[in-house]
Length: 341
Image: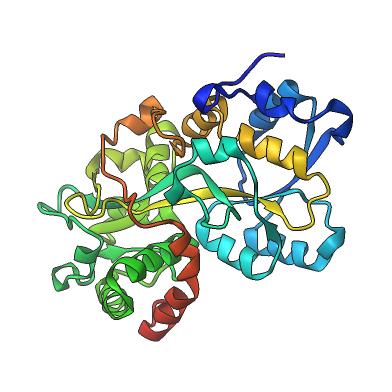
């Protein structure tokens, strides 16, 4: 069996050595809201390394949480994977998660990318960035807070309040600046919207190319796809878009996470732990970076060449990402109050 390297000399082989082969059910079941065919290769590598087969059901996070709740103790799921910390708040409140217990994960993943009670951890990082039309904007906003300044009235494209990326961004502002400041910020964004919220992150970037807006907010990898793929309405005008790493003189850019957890009723908890540990390996971490331009959650591992075009930046490592789920309810109340649809 080949070995995947972990921190402090640990390998997937040694991590699994504690489990006697007969104890393994030789399968692990995943409910995942990640929809990337490339992840098939990731799970195939895990099976090759361990002999444990991986069964995966994909769906929207809220639907999967509802399914876990309905199945209760009879759920076949061992692992729940979501593409945003905010969804983990709903899973936690639904009581469908249990803590992981792994020295490998503790050694590999920084504390601020883990739930304080080990209910989940980040497997990859996603940066929320500010983009702008280079031919129409000379001095783009330098911070998330600047987006709410009156000078950007009728110029900002951003997704709806139901989008979990925006919910987590507002939750982080609540954590750092307080609820009153967060309310003022959200109202300022509503005042500055170039159009009612619509579409996904790619649509906000398309708005820059079409001229509907001068400023857009999106996750970094949606922009990078415009270079690597022929994205209608974006790729042809990609060179007209500039970008800002927000809050570089302060807390740093807001980082969200793709997250993984063990379900409360997991029938194969040891196999589930083995897979979660595998997701922190160098191989898995570089897979996330190479396949979807995400940033590794494990420190010291670089981004892929395409992602590197965005340059170095300071990430917010002082705000524990658990605040994004803890403040999710408050964020939604604020969105409703200011009329952010």
